[in-house]
Length: 274
Image (tube, rainbow, N blue to C red; front, side, top):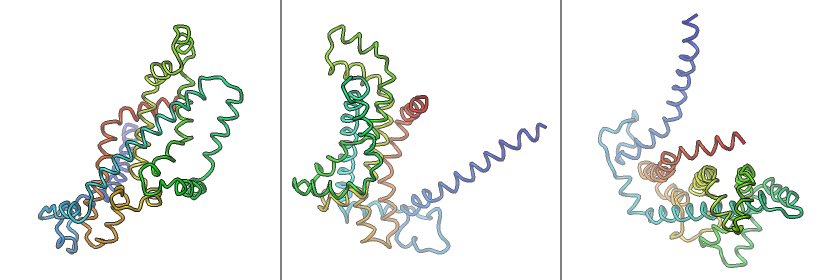
């Protein structure tokens, strides 16, 4: 009986460990390859752990390409996009959750219906509008479409609806304006959800490739995914350089998740409960 009780957890953890090892192999190979010299890349059998550690790939990536500029561009775009999404979605969610006006539910339903429209359908009209206003090949043109995010509004609205109306009514009686209620009551009470939304939005903006590829053409404005794609064309056989670039592009996301995983878990738990 005791043996059977121990066998199931042991089997489960063994299987989970095996899956974890398989999932980590590509990441390990990426780190290992980024630390090899050019000559060690083609050695047979494969050196999983390089005999001699070389930073040739890391040195080259910053000398042959404006990679530092691409990192700065990605940071700027990701932070700006996250800030715009959170600010616009919070204000819209507050209106849809706490301010009564005629036809509110109909407008919100129509608003949510836009989530059913694939992004590829609206991409060409948005591109033409940006072209008309001469906003192509600029960060403004890249960031403007991110302001409209129905999923973020829906997520925040569901949370704000759970904030008791007594808080809002008491503030009204004390003479607070809508702006004060929003900034001093709604925003502080929404921080766990805001943090979760911020992490997800930042990761999406950091890894976004297709929209920057369409909007940006100047090399000086390229984000990291575009820079990595350029490297893939010029240095396709220099895996140490490519892997060094890939590893550098992953580090901010990994660090962000490590430092913000507490907020992330809390936000998901709150979302699950509601």
